[in-house]
Length: 140
Image (cartoon, rainbow, N blue to C red; front, side, top):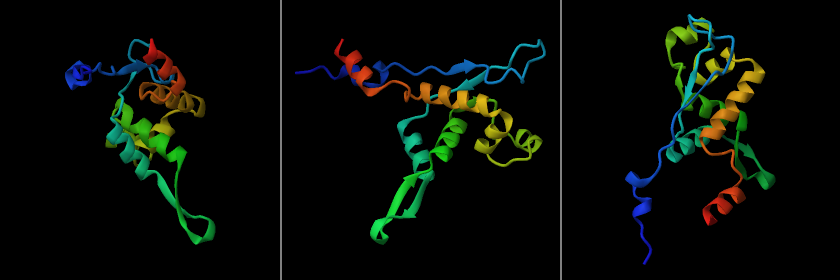
């Protein structure tokens, strides 16, 4: 019989939050870049975000097809993973004249910064490791 105790919630390693300077343009009082904080979302949260980014389109033979708007999905995922700064803060959103955490994130960061931010989000959520590497790691 196999021991299932390793799969119990208390025995699972937690995914630690990540701190990194998303942009050197935002600095603290001492002049050092502000550290942004990211967290990993649960699979349930990820599915909710993915469903919210799904769009229906007409497929072949008039059938409706569901497609994920990847840009919308990644933007919403990044916003949900962001702990600090609080992207839902009304004052912060008003200062950039936007509504919504994902729109604020795009407004705050340059395209290159935003692309790196998305890479960090995908990394903390575990999307950066190819499946075959996970299989090899599990075998060892």
